[in-house]
Image (spheres, rainbow, N blue to C red):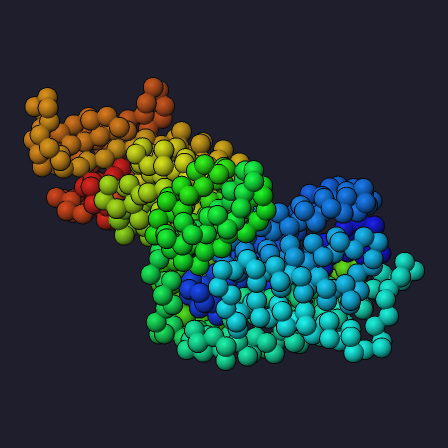
Length: 587
């Protein structure tokens, strides 16, 4: 670039990301290879977003800070590492390698202005690195598209007399024009390559789609062209979603798409591929001697991370439940949802500080999919009624089973499913808190574990959450809400009491975690309700007591009405939980 700062480079990356975001769901719905988990667009967008955030960090608040002051080698290494660590899934990891390969070529030409010749060389090196990162490269995918886009630029340069090398006196707009022309030609070649994909790959042909990653790559470069020119992106074809009735690729037999980073010394990617392939498929291990990014599909994420126990520190663990993703995607497409819904455009700066801004269209998620927010939440839940209540509050759920005892990897998969990079995790059981804290430490998202020790307390916390607030602000609101809630429960005794107070199957009433009453179900429930209706240590009596009926409750909710006297409102709902006849909370 002729500019001495990162502003124009950042504008190009921002244009690429904005254009990808505008068609992200369309890319997701094409995703069938190597497994139809429907997240290719999401994973590619996360990789670009990590690059954009790193550029902002490098530039800092001083836009006058030059590239040479930052250090060209530092910029390339930092951007490549951020892309690697931010990558998720096959498509994200391969895109990170394309970025790294291009960056390596660009940094090897100090003092040379970026033009068509250098763009072609950079993209060719990017394609080579991406191919080398995949154990068994498949033609018809993003790899083929990247290679053929690079070949088009190199061929154009070789056969054209109108591609003069740019010099120091070249104006920024002239340079932008030259780069945009080269990239637009590559985009057209990429689109042709995408269309030929089904001829090369049976999984695409059988599902009636093109490769999602390859299509996403053409969208990214079209976004760069739009940013460079300050106008609409080159036109790309739209494609119908995959046929959901087609049997899934064999890697769908594995449940978890597992991604994590390993940092250490003298790391060698090839050393770990064999052990990982014994645990699953779609294995990718890329990086350098100090940092590796690992991706695989497996049923045993804990064994995959254990492979690196003596090699370095495992971090940024992300586990996605592919079976759940496939079911959600199939259900959504079966309902005939449109791939995207147009919403107002966003502005992307072009040409440096004070230059023009272009309107880049974005999209909202189609009906049935939740919009991405700043902060999301996920709760461990048992019971269809409770699951619906959390859903109404915008909270994702993890099925904890009758005993509310999910594994760390169930929790990580639930965290992954939340469309936000900041997540509040509601464990809703004292037994889950330790596993939740472990999952939070491992996750590559920012996770706050709320001290919710019951599902009814979790509901009170969920009411206080706001998806547009930061995780810190939500933590404060949640703590205040929990300080104003007392909980109770009535359950059938699982065994005879050692102190002889009750026998197996009799009602046991709890206030908070303490056994408070026992015996007849009605009398026990009445005792718990009466206690919750009384303020503690001089506090005012509660205004509302919620009663959630579970499976096999020996009284209908209608019979509970009127069991509390005075001005306290009773909210009665079916929770459907397995272990408790009634869950109660007083606010």
